[in-house]
Length: 315
Image 1 (cartoon, rainbow, N blue to C red):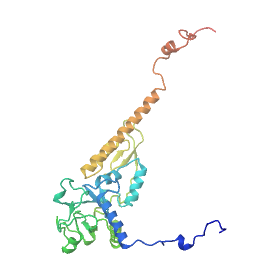
Image 2: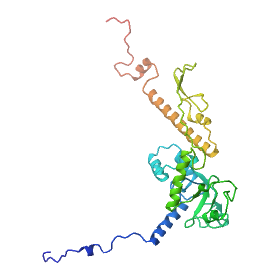
Image 3: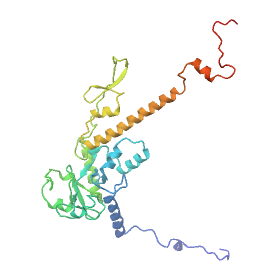
Image 4: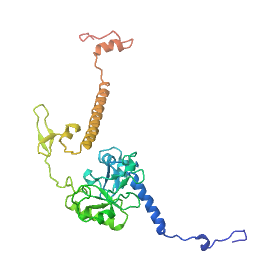
């Protein structure tokens, strides 16, 4: 400006290359990389996908143990929040997921059905590898996975593996990318919830809200005013009952889920008992259990040790 050797850059020099939208090739490359990640990695635990694998109403794949761990009570609120952001409220119970039954190729014996290698999961009809770049679907409620082309070519609404009947709307695309498939899945789960059904076509728990009156009963063993809540059969259950004992009344059909839940509740019960015991020990330390006269004889100072004023002493 003032003969100092500087110059004022023009707009053309500042904006050498205008912002542009990504090309179709770049979009395909980024989409393919995302598909490879979600076909091989569990988004909840960041671990490789391994059988048993489940899927939610949006067609996403997860490890079943990650879903069970998310559904169990936990003190880590940060992890719970991150998992809810990934699931987007699609999974509230095990009825909201379906076990996916992939056909494993002969060359994947070393990995035992994991998704870490290429060509391990195949369509049992076309023998086509299922993974990134291939449109794959599974059928509800049986969960068998096929390539989309095989399901379109075969007429009828029976599973080609187990002959389970299904509706055309129960063909779920795995990791859908098109807006049409995403909108169809959203409309499907909305209609199912209005009918009281979950993604696996099972009845949703808690759809009938019944008001349960809390009964106050008096026990004969000095337990006056014990609050008892009615169970499913209408019989009162004491609230002082341990969680592990109350678990016997819950009707969990899956044996592995029931055992894992019972183990967690038993650990919590033992932790609570240990905490109460420690509190009692701390309170006992505040009071002396010995005779006060014996303690004064041993713990008194040189002026008071061995001397006591009789009760009938004259003043």
